[in-house]
Length: 117
Image 1: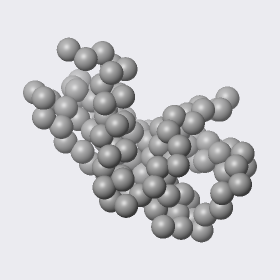
Image 2: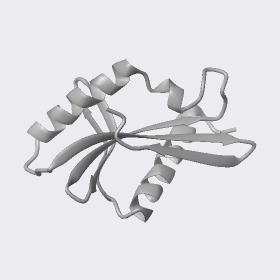
Image 3: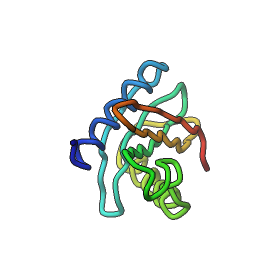
């Protein structure tokens, strides 16, 4: 049985592959600052996409999608601003997406919610 960290890393790698297959360019992974972490930063045309990846192997604490609360989305907006200030790239728009992955009995399901805020 995979540890929580291993499950999270596997889910994040699946999310990266999914985004790339849809033509997005991965700019950075696991960017951290004192306010927190952004799982994936990607370019989708002229948009910066801040991607929160949630992976679950059980629904005992709710679904993967339900685990992204308003406080987390607010923190992601702050983190996106911090990231943009720290580098020279410019974008037309910024959006926050959630990729919710669940693995039950070895089968993966993926749900991508675009522009959650």
